[in-house]
Length: 114
Ligand code: AMP
Ligand code: ZN
Image (tube, rainbow, N blue to C red; front, side, top):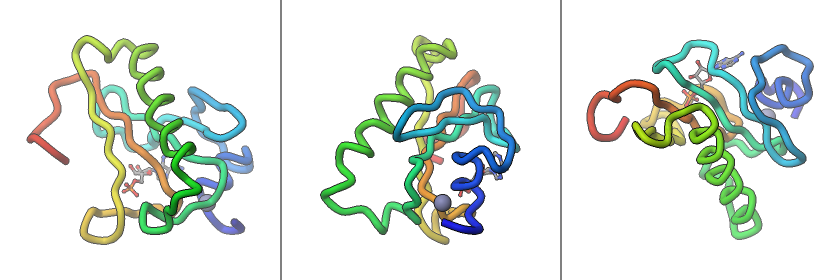
């Protein structure tokens, strides 16, 4: 989608520190990390948020989790643990309206949820 930050990062029109890419997904370091490891996993296809999902997205969403878990292992987070977060809409504080999952770890994370 024109004028979408994460579409542009996926298309390499805007630079990012990419840690994984494949036919479906791109993962890159968050520009304002909230933990020692803070990676965003995004689908190449533009999906605005979890609100836009339907049955056809099941495999893609599964891949996001599988790739996040592989990255967590590769980045040394498996033993200590980590958190995956996907914010949806204003109450959750979503600021970029291209679906993405945060991978956070490398330190004890505050609170139980967000
Ligand atoms: P959310 O608040 O869940 O929508 O998350 C959006 C995330 O995108 C935030 O953690 C931002 O720090 C991050 N972000 C914004 N712009 C960039 C960028 N150019 N490169 C990498 N991460 C970004
Ligand atoms: Zn997009």
